[in-house]
Length: 282
Image (cartoon, rainbow, N blue to C red; front, side, top):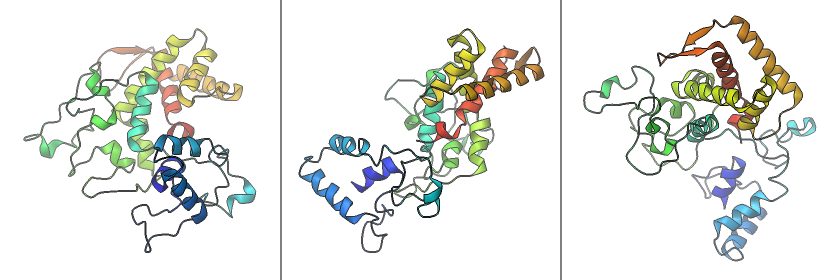
């Protein structure tokens, strides 16, 4: 029950999931934890599906995640459950979501590990005995789900490491989430996110006729909600500024084909969407 709670709320009722005992942290709500545990084993007959339904339909989980000023000082980490959860997505989900929103994510299941784009020089020490062969653009192995990405304990996949994925040298029950500039550097410049932004931009251009409609379509894809007029207006201003600065055609960093100024500008707008806090957070 504590592990499921932590996956939904970002932190368990007992924060130290890896040390669930007398030497770990005490539960923030011991009576609630006991009640859920007993009901999970008895009433729910060990059904994780029923437990998930119980938690996600609760008024506690369905609260707004906005921090109210009067509670900011009293409950900064939401240990009193004064607001709904707002947690950064795990590393694997950050990558998969960007590919999915862009329409690139492969639904292929099973098979050997895959080798998505990797920063230059990272794999040089291992190339002789363990080659990293990246699939070409358009090959679905380049866009497989993160669970299929080849892992090596001595050199973890850089994007995953930046977003707090463990090295797998030891069993890790709980991931400690960080917030560093390197994460933004990765989502703004990594080859996978660059391709995702370009694909999302093309999807936006093809998804509607007028610029406001295209921007509204992209915001809905990225955030899963209806955008406000102010948000669309801000993106429209950004797009028009980019169009004034862009040459008539530009080359992307990893392919020779040329893209139009409209495609390049919309790709930058799409990159902004993929980097919104509400897109990278649950």
